[in-house]
Image (cartoon, rainbow, N blue to C red; front, side, top):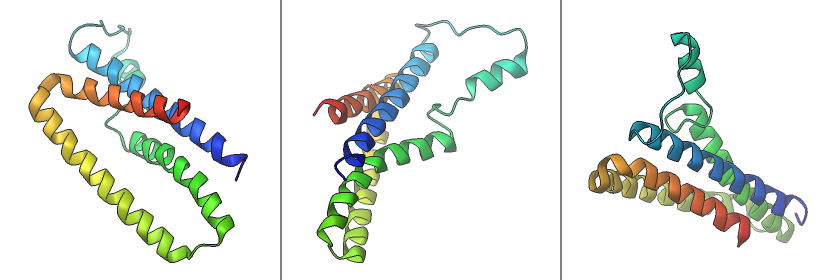
Amino acid sequence: GRIAGPLAGVIGALVLMAIGLSVIWKSLKELGYVKAASFSGAPAARRQEQSILASDTFGSLLLLGGSVSLDALSVGFGLGALQVDLWLTVITMGVIAGLMTLTGLLCGRILNRTFGRWAEMIGGVILVAVGLKLLFV
């Protein structure tokens, strides 16, 4: 737990920051602050845009969920060493994580309604900030 815990936290933080930076970059392109690179073939350009870090793909949701769960993995190592009740712990943490995710999604919708086109960039900044917090705190 002492070895895997800090490593899992660092990996999770770096993935969150990468996703956040990808979202910020995409927002800057959509807002017209950055010109998109032009490719000679349209299919190649579409393939280039389909990144695992794109904020609207199933793969990015899996990557985001996995990166956030790496932090929970390190907590699980510690709790496993203390031999806490397995099912009570899993159910409690699952319910709390689900409620926190639901709260974040609802806040994201409010953010979208309030800030419109800038909401996605603000969300990316929040992801980078959470990643930095996990990395340095």
